[in-house]
Image (tube, rainbow, N blue to C red):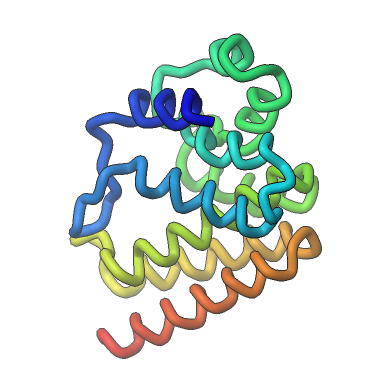
Length: 176
């Protein structure tokens, strides 16, 4: 596990979250992994490793082959499964997440759920400075559509998402 933590931290070094707090990007990876570990009660280390690495292919120069060599085929395939194709326009990538979510493996769905929880919490507590209310609300609506395709895999994680969604929308309304 410590090899994966070190690998992810090194690959994402210098990256920051989009929020006003500009926290290290690794904090997001750690939160996603923690949520997945809680949801599975630690019984599935592969999904926890995948959660820690879920953005390495998408946001760094890391390849699936490199992940396979370092951490095995199972982890590499899982990370590849949750990776967006950055060659596509952003709007198309977002639409594909909605369309493909119901067809993902249970492990990928767990990571998607945890990722969206972390992102909603980030937008709620440290929103990107250049995001107006409408953009934040659009993200919340889109995240809910992605999560709708992931439902049925873990009731606890779904409840945590629903709470983060409600709390975030309430805070956005209060900040209006």
